[in-house]
Length: 93
Image (tube, rainbow, N blue to C red):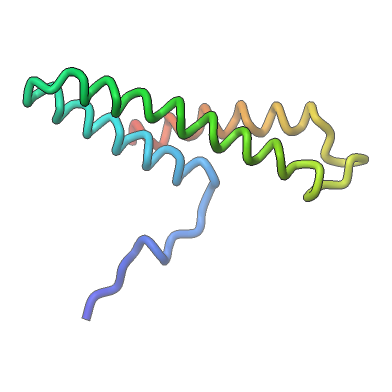
């Protein structure tokens, strides 16, 4: 029997983003080692593409999921900035 620990983790939102960022970087390093510079560039481009898509989706859903008296747009900007920083910390771990 095996248990997949991926389904047992409950933690910060930035963890998943950091994990995928790290995978893109590892894939880029592999591509560079194989002399596939174009593929490496593509892998690294995916980091910004992923973040941009995540941020756009989160911003689109923000008005539906919050009480504007508590969760204002400044809070959204602060959360996104913190998650982006934390994602890179998880990616580096």
